[in-house]
Image 1: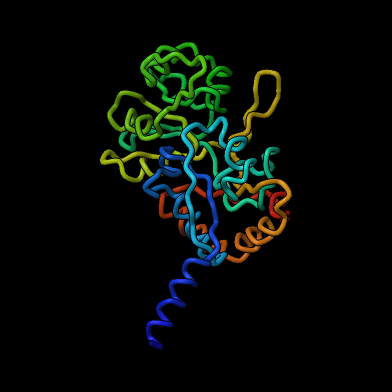
Image 2: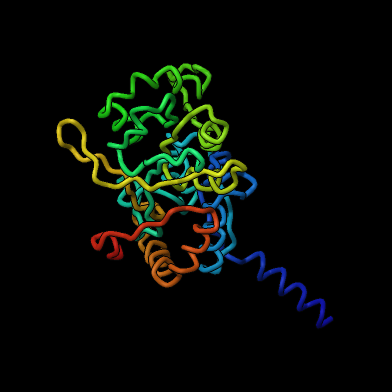
Length: 273
């Protein structure tokens, strides 16, 4: 009877364990997927464990609306991997900072230190995601129009009207590995896993954060990433900030396991919310 009572007590404790509902993408690798294989899935699991909660993944399919349709309606508590200061949410102190990268075949030994590199002017094909800083700088150096048709091929000429058009990060890295593109310009965390796994040795170079448009306006290439919570949930925000502050080494190790290039935070970003 005592053993039976203990068993019921254990089951009740499991059932009563609070949950941490995390909004996660159904298929946005290498960040996350429904099978929990992305690096943000692993980070969410780690955060839930630190909070003493059971992780509950709430999946979305279209990034344009999930904050409005999921977070604001209380269907999930936390969003991993948002820009620090995202106005739609309360955001934690950043848990990592990274940058956009140039990716090339190691055997080509290209000198790709910045956007003035001659290799960018000579490249036949440059893979990139539209709407990112890469597009802005390709326009600055006069290579955007050269790449327009190729860029459309990467999504099979699908219409963009009222559609979420996704550029697959592994495909863009593999374009370089297979020799179909000379260079790719991608967000480091999005590309790192595939660069690391490539059977063709690839070189990934972090792009300096000192670029400007023709009108002198800065084009940012380094960004800090935070965890987002629903506005007004100050208690959860404080708990998450404490985890980020106390467990920086463990969080960095999870990211580095994916090959993600990590950069130092500016002093202004280190203050806790």
